[in-house]
Amino acid sequence: MKKATAAPAHPLADELRPGQSVELLKELHILTREGRLNQDSRRKLKQVYHLVQFIETLLKELPEGGAGATLADHGAGKSYLGFILYDLFFRALGSGHIYGIETRAELVETSRALAARLGFARMSFLPLSVAQATTDATLPERIDVVTALHACDTATDDAIAFGLAKNARCMALVPCCQAEVAACLRQHKALALARTPLAELWRHPLHTRELGSQLTNVLRCLYLEACGYQVTVTELVGWEHSMKNELIIARRSGGPRRSAAERLRAILEEFGLASLQPVRFPRLPAA
Ligand SMILES: C[S@@+](CC[C@H](N)C(=O)[O-])C[C@H]1O[C@@H](n2cnc3c(N)ncnc32)[C@H](O)[C@@H]1O
Image 1 (cartoon, helix red, strand yellow):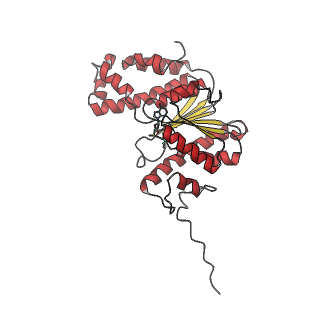
Image 2 (tube, helix red, strand yellow):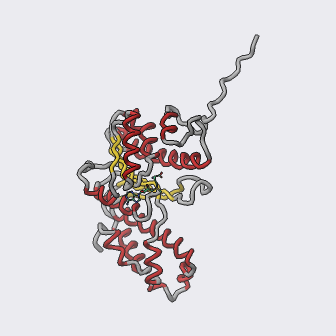
Image 3 (cartoon, helix red, strand yellow):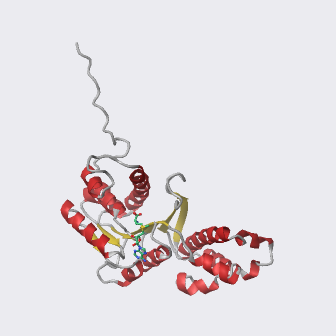
């Protein structure tokens, strides 16, 4: 008698999630027409899957397991994240809506056409900057989840401002490079600390940039806490997959936290960054 042999595993078995549309991945050019995955796409897919997992957890924590949830994806680019989230979560849920916000009109057009082809009716793509989206009437007043994956420079700060304006229940942010704080450090030489050994932290230009980036994310977390969010910071994927790997998860958890606001103000003061307060942290509770 012939021995039964197990069906060979799908060549992408490790990359695909149950119920995942292979056609979608081909349409997004993550998979080639032959269904293969190159090294860059594998890296991108890994980042997107990890973020999708974090966002799914946040959606499931919402009332009724996320039914009817609204989500804004800022600096959406080709909207890999939005499409995969829709395919894996929103499609089966049968309700809710994803808004992709992106300044490049040609990417918005491509995403609109793809969503129409796939029948992903509860996705909208808007050719707006994050800042414009905050007051644009096309978007609903209530956005439950705000996300931004590598939105350039200060677009992450704008995404936080958007989330606060929309009273978002949660945010999942993976910042990109940021130059604003480093420029301020260079300009003011962190006045109060300049004559202390701590000035070594930003003496070399590379360190100024790294410290600027670190300070930026520390200030973002304190701002979110000061505005009533509980914050966790973690890695998105292993460092071998991406240098821009910090994931900030914020859940609305109650009233403003005075201690976080005080610390934020103190750091701005110490590092000569006070001019950033009205621009980046306008909702900081009063001292
Ligand atoms: C590095 S790409 C990331 C795209 C996508 N999130 C991803 O991870 O594949 C950043 C995108 O943000 C867009 N962008 C930059 N600044 C923006 C802003 N202020 N408002 C909206 N989109 C912005 C850019 O056009 C670009 O498509």
